[in-house]
Length: 391
Ligand code: V47
Image 1 (tube, protein in one colour):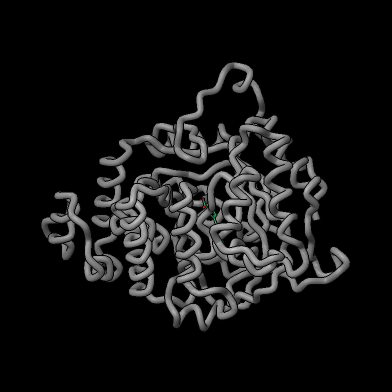
Image 2 (tube, rainbow, N blue to C red):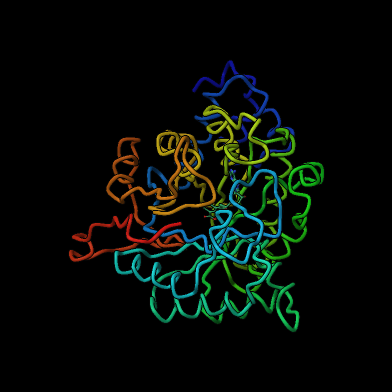
């Protein structure tokens, strides 16, 4: 390892000894020109935790509406509400449409459906409860990972009579919700919040939802949206807040964050389209730093939809052990120069990317249990794009 001559010697020693890195260490990792050592250290931690095992899953993302009461500057997905669909590119799916998609994916071998959407001004709380209940009835073993913390808070506001975060989560869990995705975290910093996503609930709200979920035994993920107006110091503070929260959940023996998902900002189509977004080296450095700073979260995911399949593949040697899944349709961000929301990798392609990166592909379910498939499953072509009538 090149660390003997590196400015990162003391950090390398801490990582070698399994000691926790400080805020100052994190900032130094962002300032250091020694990018290769950072990658090697993150890979060392990754191999200590998981060897070369690399996780992926067979999943389907469903974005049930793009109508949103918020106007976050980084978001190119939201549309102001209009009563008639399609006037301005806005849409909302019915519960039946959602169930049909989930059911189709389930019969093709999906183990997870990942459902998030905008904060719709009109849909009642029952819509979300029905969504979970009807998916659960139609697909008894499909894990429903749904609703960011921001949506959960929205549900507390629209429920009649008004429910607490705990009551909302309990109703959804009883209807079939399995876990929470990590979205909506952005950057936990008041300066960044006030500039870029002012109308969104602050970070205390995000943590309240995840704390309550963890107390109820509901596992969740965490994200960090990077590469817009935030500074490296603000990224490190964000990671330390996540680490402190995870310490709390683990100390109480509660459910906790399974996985952290750094999301590179994609400027295209957003109000911040004049910004360049992160480069590939920033992506790799950030993924590696997240691995090094978050010593108490087991898994680090590259979301290939945003990092791109090729960079996500490279990142498997930079601390990442999870490739997310087949995804199929993704409406929130589109690939560079793409107009379609059909964004899919077959499980065979994912496995090939992992193997070529020196990884051992392991299909997991949402809670990181290995999925064992029989021959009839293996014969299914886990590729189903183009089946739905898309907007
Ligand atoms: O909440 C919005 C972010 C999130 C942009 O938990 C953007 O396993 C980049 O949270 N550029 C949704 N990001 C995605 C998400 C996620 C994805 C994959 C796996 C998991 C998981 C969670 O995407 C939003 C927001 O933070 N986002 N706009 C954009 N222009």
